[in-house]
Image 1 (cartoon, one colour):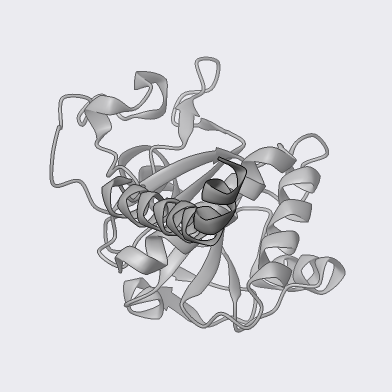
Image 2: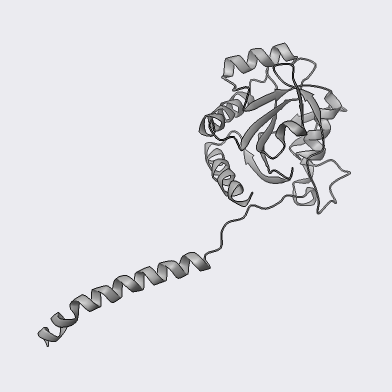
Length: 221
């Protein structure tokens, strides 16, 4: 009996290895690739969405814009044409969540320094304070790479409309008419100007997930 098993031991090992390989291949074939959702206004917390859009369930994209960056250069949709980008809202004199958010944007910039497919875009919510000169000072202090990351200012209404009607990332301020409360949200935008993810810009784990999702999105693009 022992001779019988010894005789076929090698064959058994070969069959076992082949079985493992076949099972692994089948698993990889059947395992669905993760695909990021495309967010529509009706699917987002209504607090973040302008009332005129809360019913919209399809075709939502980021509206065209014309703003000015830390170098006094015009920044429009053309600047981000065919790019994946991460957008947020902040102001340079913020002492609460903004420093943490900016630190995490710096981390994303460093992680994707040599990735030409991905850019960053930060909008000030206090354009009356954050002039081009102020944004430039802030950019230098924080180590902003001008070719990768634009800090933008401009018309207050345009910025607020972008926050509430495009990026769906800010709340109305109930105490101050025509004002808003910016949030900690980082928003992932694809090359078709669609929202593909929201992330807590103050949470290191969310930043890790954002970086992973960017890689998923790059494969899709």
